[in-house]
Image 1 (cartoon, one colour):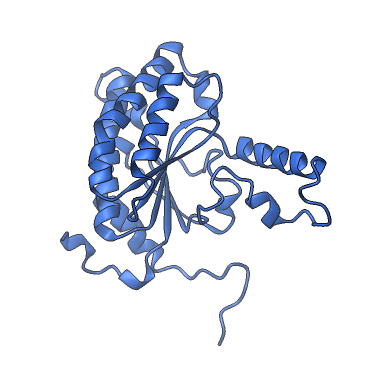
Image 2 (cartoon, one colour):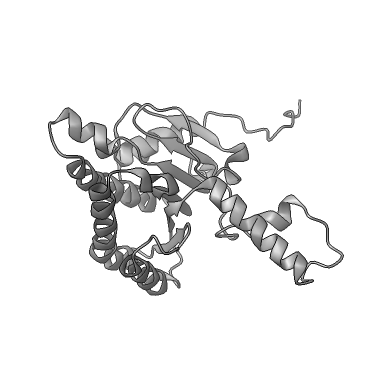
Length: 246
């Protein structure tokens, strides 16, 4: 057990931590390497962070892997990322399954995503669906605004089909139609690389999330940084718009 965990209060852990993994390209550029090398180094950071989450006993970890805006990157990089993510699932899913991790994906599985990538996603979800440890959610071809649009479209379709007859449109009826209604809202959102924005990530779910920013580029991130973020989270007072009792 890591000594970095000694001062963490296990009774006050965030139930759900979400991470914007940013800085792969800058990490590579600083070293005179192609951007693809930054993505490869980012896999090591991702794996160590997931292991740290399992070690700590987190229930949910969500990682932003590929956004709906990332299609605007050079074609060669997009092609690399599709193959990289397909290979990542093949390389890691058996290990994650052995760790009792449940793998899920959120995002649009549309025609832009190669069928071979979708197949690897489906295999990973099916392999691990009965696991009871950490739920690792990968946001892939994901955008927060797109998720809300898709939820509203489902809501309109249900209204037109008469499946919501007599019911009001509420925050709950929209939330029930998000990509993964079972997912709890993130208690803590981490962003690496010094950028201080959430960049279209979990917009609906982030309404009351605590935010933690670090200048560390993603390939240099590891489980100790995760523990540092949670340590800071445990010092905060979460009021959700209310006032603490005297």
